[in-house]
Amino acid sequence: MGAQQERARSSGPAPVRAALPDGAAGFTIIELLVVMLLIGILAATAAPRFFNQSAFEGPAFAFELGSAARYAQKLAVSSGCAVQFQLPDAASYRLRHASTVGTCGSDFSLDVTHPANGNAFAGTAPPAVIIATTVSFPVSVVFNAQGIPTLPDPASDLVLGVAGKSVTIHRGSGYVEVQ
Image (cartoon, rainbow, N blue to C red; front, top):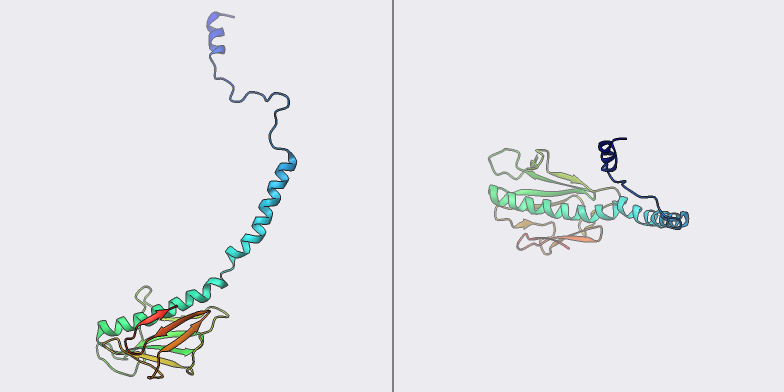
């Protein structure tokens, strides 16, 4: 063999990994099984928590309800016309205004358009979530052009209970509070 061939063979790439000497090894099968068992236990206890949304849907609907009432108040102030926040039953809400666009009426037969999707501004509670209140359904709150509400019971604030949260519409100011 020539000197050039010998140099070419010896200058080739070094081996990526040398063989392990006797006695040096990776993980044992027992160690791998223990790790897999721990991952399995963690997955079995934590996975249901991540995939069960019912614990979050009720409070989220309470915040949605409060946001809808706030939007009704702000729309009444900005448009100069009264807006109705209505709870037809214990599982839904909707916003309504006068049937003739451009005039301020009190018939509340036209749905308010949702600014995000162009549909009627309305919502339905998730399964097993109900709206609780001390007044009977349907509940109607009308916000006037100053944002002051007309409540079912003019002597007290309207408190709606939803999944451990309370949505309060204050009678004097129209302030909507979710706690």
